[in-house]
Image 1: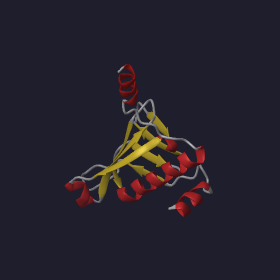
Image 2 (image 1 turned 90 degrees about the horizontal axis):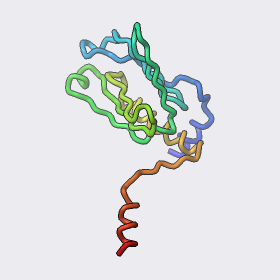
Image 3 (image 1 turned 60 degrees about the vertical axis):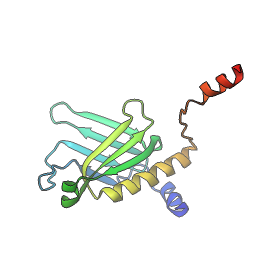
Image 4 (image 1 turned 180 degrees about the horizontal axis):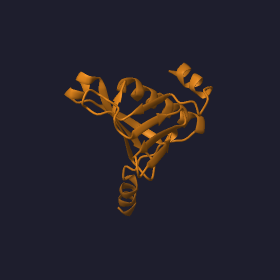
Length: 139
């Protein structure tokens, strides 16, 4: 895994690793106007035909990734990936009905870890410890 992270540092940050369209469950055809683009530094979701919306998230903000597949998705070879992020605009980014979901999920996990190591960032969770400390000091 350390070798994977080192080689990811050397990659071009703007090189597109995955570019996929949201697919219909009907035969897995890409007849939607949602496009997912993944580079080593960013995850981008473009949606819409008349009114378009582009949602970006830096890879270092991706904290966890979850893959879910329904029976029909498994039959067709699709999956839905949920990225839990520290992004202010969208805490959950969903890549719905994409091909090769396990490969994409594994790449997202490795790329997010590599991006955090490169930026030397640390994820913090609020577990409510401040309240416990203040209660203990009052006693």
